[in-house]
Image (cartoon, rainbow, N blue to C red; front, side, top):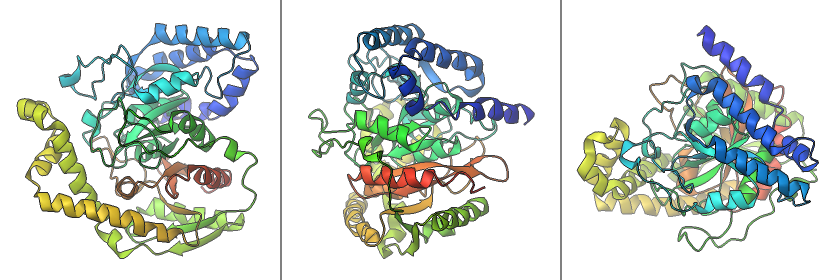
Length: 457
């Protein structure tokens, strides 16, 4: 335990000032170089990776070479934008040319990508340095990862974007890409004390991303601040002919929408029901302090009732996830069942056994709730819930995604960020939920709230 506490202090607290926003400005003015920044991240990996285990592959030589080219571009007066020269980690279900996309499984160890995913191609175009591949739970499911939580090595970092969240928390990279089908961005970001964004379903292309449950798979960013999330999401979002699930909604200018900051305090709808009933005492106490802090700052904070059909959301979500995961892995599962870890194996068995009628009813419920939930925004700009049930549990689990799965089910965008620590010293976070394809408004409200969360402990 002593080693775990020391690690939290050494790795997290000194790194809170190093954001994409702040470092990006130094790079742009050539007060720092991308090579220096990448070297700094590599030194942090060298210092901590043996204990944290956030990475599958670190492309040391390639990252330095990328950084050198980007520094040369800046010297020539070419600036690609706020990601120019910024080191980014990529979850190991997303293709990066020349590296395996193994998804945490030896079955895919030879699955070497021959081209970049759309996400990675867009990050490169925006000037990001692809530092390497981060650890995912096996096939992005629920089996515990090798990664450890930087705040306490005896606690889970969450999943399935375990390595992405832990790497950002440790300063091993300034941002990372995760994905969420249940709670796989929000939960690890929250447990590791950083920020996460699950975009609207279809906002970010899944071309070159290993599927889990295609009707609910959401790639998205993990970073230190709300503004940093907006910078990454703006770079990777937008229509993509290579992805039939990708929406035709044009890209939004998410970063420009944050300047000037929101002038009028937002209207915040607090959701109770499931979110009040299942929250653990430290989170319930924190939510009361958050609501009071927002009220004192001028926000209109009111409780919002959930639709009655929300009562079945977790059951319907599970049905869709199980059936679609079974369809994704059916052929591989039939040949290599024993090599699937227990939780993903159980989920696939569940999906293979599910009656077709159950899946159809769950999909109908998904479509109906996705429309009905919009009524919650009648008098609210954003909806507020805890990001997780409480602080990170032990390493036998990746944590309960109950507070995140409803938004993967309905496809609504969410932003989560830390609000302080629980009595055990572990991070707590809230999540704000927005309306479909209105991430710009969501980020504006989230940044306003984030700025007022410094003293909620």
